[in-house]
Image: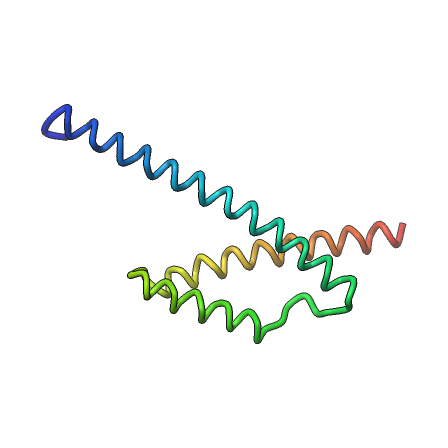
Length: 105
């Protein structure tokens, strides 16, 4: 329990600020996924493989380095990026499967 009402008010203020940042992160994720879909369409139209391992490794190394420069744990950030990437790949595979299914119907 907090020692005072002012302490509780300060905690509430900090939590509201975290909520605002979380909402901003969600909006950025939505924007990122919009761009990922555009990249996927471009790759599909130009017969470019979905996963370009060299590019992905470069992105991951870059994120680790930038995270560390910002005082963040590079491995934690790499884990987050791997999760984001996995979801993007899963969505892409789902779309591909649907297109293939639609073409076979």
